Image 1: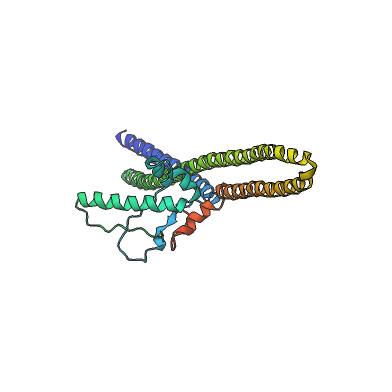
Image 2 (image 1 turned 45 degrees about the horizontal axis):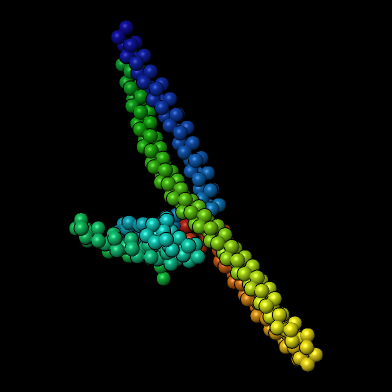
Length: 124
Length: 157
């Protein structure tokens, strides 16, 4: 009787584990569909993230990349003229926000004793 | 019976290991999807804000253009009305009639040209400003081009 109980318990475990695997695969499929739809949308709106790996040859040390997604919103908090300027000349606002961010990051990193070189690229 | 128990236990362990692996992969996928959506949301909010400001600026520009246009026409009509008083007086005397007519024609021609130029410049400036403020669909595409050497890519899943 004891042996049959063990077999029944093991069978139940196998069933639950198999159901778990099947359910997880279903969820993975759903997430993959969601990602695919999202990718299509971002491609249509031309707002795909930059491919930072294109900047780095293989084998180089890792780098942290920062992309500011709301430069005009940030700038308009500082000055009321920033928002109209951001519409007419967004590159000017982007440059100012990035320069300020670099300065802030440098200051904060020094406070924590982090020896780091903070640079911006593609702002020429 | 022992071999059956051992077999079932091994199968159960294997399935649980597989489930753990799938769960780990799923959580990674979800983290990535969440990060991508947060990014898209931030970009959309920024774009929406810029579109709102563009609309406000366009309205201000149209109002300014209309005000200048209407103001110029009003000043022109007042100017011509006032100027016609001495010309009418001068034209009522036979001695100065001919000369007054010539001067009036010249005056009206120059005044019309000046006001016409003001109106034309106002419209041209307005059209140029509207061209600058019109939302451009390629703005997002410009984002890709603004960082030399940085390509936009499809997020890996």
